[in-house]
Length: 303
Image 1: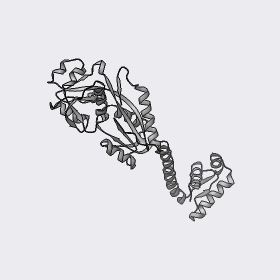
Image 2 (image 1 turned 60 degrees about the horizontal axis):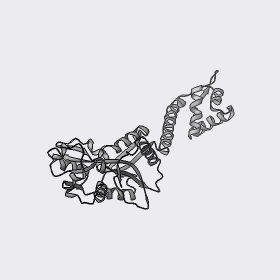
Image 3 (image 1 turned 120 degrees about the horizontal axis):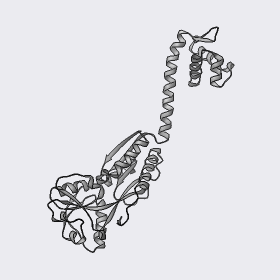
Image 4 (image 1 turned 90 degrees about the vertical axis):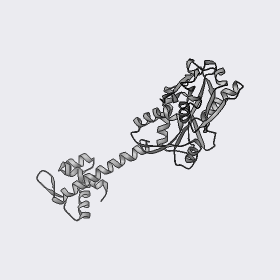
């Protein structure tokens, strides 16, 4: 019993006439009759009886029709699912994320992706950069997002956005009275760095250009933790603009003065040999986001 013969059987049962069924199937009557007889011989039962107007199902035929329709429906569903998987519209994609990038850009990209591919199961893995890279190389995730990735020959990196740097201050800090923060303000300001150092590279470049070293008094696991420490009064922190979405007690955000205004990168990275249509679909959403959100002008770019 094969799918083709079941289809011929279903159409004949629906039309109750060999001629009309053959016309609908775009074949002639003799081969259709042979297929029905072959199916009856294989099953050892009569499926149709002839009538004055055509054919009608026997009891065995009616029993087979229910199963045949269910089988046909499952096959159609399987074909549609396979097509969606091949087109990057269904399946599972594992994504590495970390820190402040989760607060703005990535959710907007994933929202666009979920609208474009509603049947794809998105699994997020929150892990520091080194663990993301390890998971990526081992094939446990398909793409990773973070602020800074060192070049690796087997990986492809794409710039997604460049966010302005702001400073997070405790509301008891006298600097909150200022509309923007200058270099002179930062020279004696106790700052909270980050262990992951994604934003640290950008801020260090800013200080290097201005010929002084920042006063780092604490290091946090990531920018979100750094702002929590600001809330607790442990110091101030240079943060990407997306961190402004955090609403924590005692925390006030101020922009940097125009002469030291800087940006920090957000990248995605994936294996160069990865051919998954799911990755291609996500990268299409990333590139569409980049077109809709051009890099801001008037800022000093920090890699």
